[in-house]
Length: 254
Image (cartoon, rainbow, N blue to C red; front, side, top):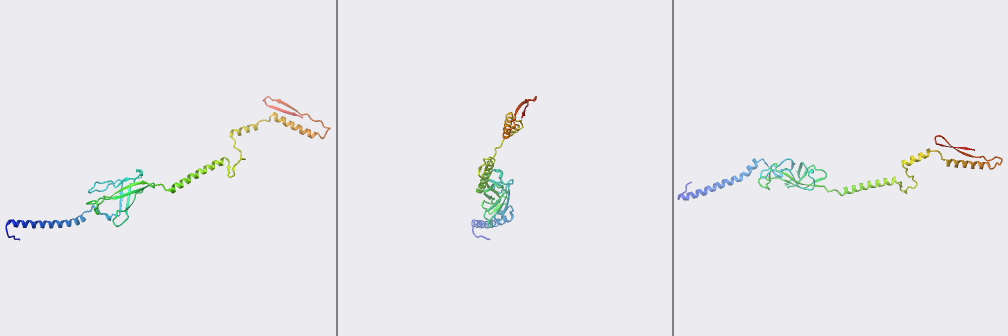
């Protein structure tokens, strides 16, 4: 290329031409760079392609722009810390790329997940459709399950039923029936009373009882002898003798 004119004019046109060439080169490089990065970079994943995630409490996320953090982090809830999950499995509910997940952590029956979130690090910026591989974490709240109304009803019924059974057993011991208290029921006697009554039975008959028995025999004998006037009344003599062993012996002579 030949420029006619002064050297200053030629230099001016040469500078403009050089700038146009450099601008064209940089523009083409900028358009081709993303395609090359998408092909070469393997540490990033398209966000909507993730359908299942398994996270662990004792492992950390992978960070590129951010610091690594535990894969499972609790951010609230009223449940005790002993119920915290050690492993969580999350499944995407939609295929349209929306951030809707269902997570299962093998929790006890007393607790449940509250609000939770799957958080992943964007590769170049926060809302980047590509995320850093291994950068996803699980943020959750853990709450105690409210007790059902039916559980209260069933528990109250069982307690009342047990109280009623105990009350009926106590009434039965006291002699109560459907017609009322049993008045003809013999009261229980203590062991001391039963032993005392047995000892009284084993004792010898008293003198007064023997004398009363002899008097009855006399009256019976008199009644039998009244029709026959020829017979004489018999005399009854009661003699008391005392033996050496301090026992009384009663002899009745007729």
